Length: 115
Image 1 (tube, rainbow, N blue to C red):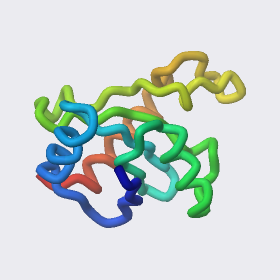
Image 2: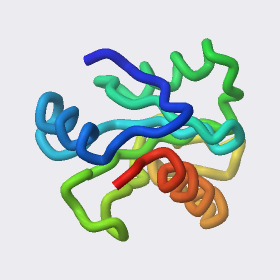
Image 3: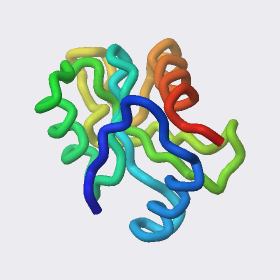
């Protein structure tokens, strides 16, 4: 699947189609919390991360998530990615340990995904 950088908006229904064609029920995404954009559609979060870095993002602002478009709004974001492991930013797990960063990610996703 081709990776897309979302700077404006993507329909949740489009994410659903992508999910069905790729992993079945979810889409991988990497969110830039500073630029408020995200990359979707990669087989690996690392591929999406690389595309955003080439586009001018700073690595410390990039966080990997999974989006489950068929789940309810309060359950559809999963904070789980190998790219999130960064002890230098006090994040020692695949999740996103800082609640402020999780909120920023949620806000970017809410801004970019139309229901």
